[in-house]
Amino acid sequence: MSEQVELGRGAVLVIDTAGRACQVGVFVDGVARVARAEEMVHGHAEALLPLVQAVVAEAGVGFPDLGAVVVTAGPGSFTGLRVGLAAAHGLGLALGCPVVAVSSLGAWAMTADGAVRVALDSRRGDAFVQDFDAKGAALGAPAILPLAEIRANNDFAVIGDLAGGVAPGLAAVFRAACNPAHRCAPVPMYLRDADAVPQGAPKCG
Image 1 (cartoon, one colour):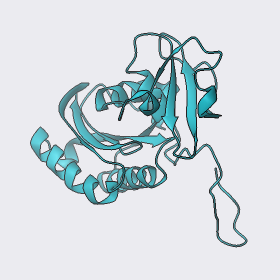
Image 2: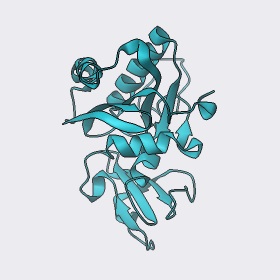
Image 3: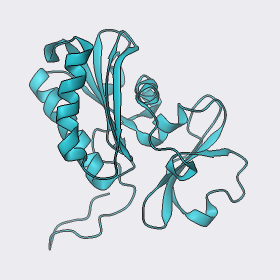
């Protein structure tokens, strides 16, 4: 199970396509050897695999050397999440290594030194929000809030793309993945039902 995967030793591939960037890096023994990010809102599907190949080559490791693949599961871009998770699952299956998924909100929390509210733009007039204490521990479940309520009755600093950020950075994604509390199922974390589903099919969240 991903909760038991040790990431501090060996080579780990880290993928983040949940936000406004396509990020790929290789960490060896817990230290970033190569980390690259290309800012984008769309186009993750075309950019991701060439970036993975370039980063692995630049890191001087072979694909068989990778002991795990870390990927952000969301919440975030609908298409970006699917692209990143599909690539991670494909690599994990081909290499026979575990896939460790991490909350995008938890990854953002790892970029701060104190208690924060992470707010990510849903692009629907509201935001994906979660509060964290100074140690990066979640203070409640993630929620969807109207933009006007993000700062209301809240003393925490607000971070995330709604506060001017682009992406949490791969070091933060890796640190979150090292904490089992921020790991999640390797499926898209949408936090809301899909707008449309095939006739007769159940909605999924």
